[in-house]
Amino acid sequence: MNFLAHCALAFEASERWPHGHDMRPGLLAGAIFADFGKGPIDRSLPVALQTGIRLHRRIDAFTGQHQAVRDGCTVFPKKLRRYAPIFLDILGDYYLSQNWDKYYSHSRDTLSQQCYQACDIHARYLSAERSAQMARFLGYMRDTDLLANYHDWHHIERAIRSVMRRLDKLSLQNEAITAAHDLRDSGEAAFGIYFGEMRHALLNWASLIPSASDGTQSNSQRETT
Image (cartoon, rainbow, N blue to C red; front, side, top):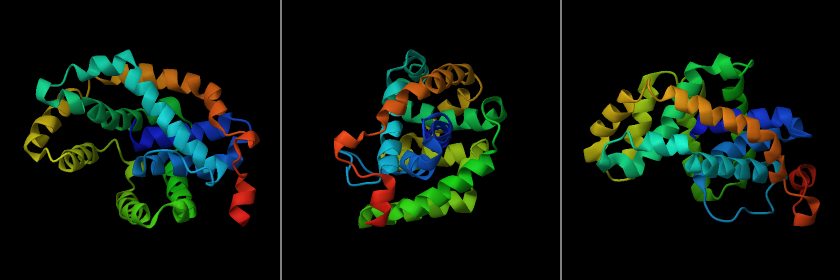
């Protein structure tokens, strides 16, 4: 999943998990921050932020193993297949944005503004390097209101170009965009399957919240230290 889907599921978790509403800012920030750091999660972070990062990783693991995603990867030309899961993640945000009202009663604008605010609140927990990266990306997200506008195909093409640039595969970017465009309509049904299954599993994923025995501080404890 890409940013919109991660944030949408984090917001939904905040509505469905016990005490989830109090955790919402941390869950939303974690949904985005998880892409700006790998490795073990710092247990000194606020519990909600830790949980948001764990949820992001659980979602990635779920989609990576789903047969519908694997089948979707085979549609891409062989030279692009190793990158196909990334393209499908990006397309997932397009499908979700196109069909937002089918899944949620709150608006994309409501979600996007709360996500940007959550990132501001929790930015101090990022390292200096990660904070600079996050600030640049968040500036772009805000300027374009990206989370509210993934239904604009322009953002999908830009995201694919960005991926190919990071992978140092600029020679393949036009083919990647063409392949994603070819899947633009036919991949929506598969997305509906695995996104629906994730929403169904979401309540069980409340087990991702660290317990007191893990040695983590509560949100309130962490915010006042």
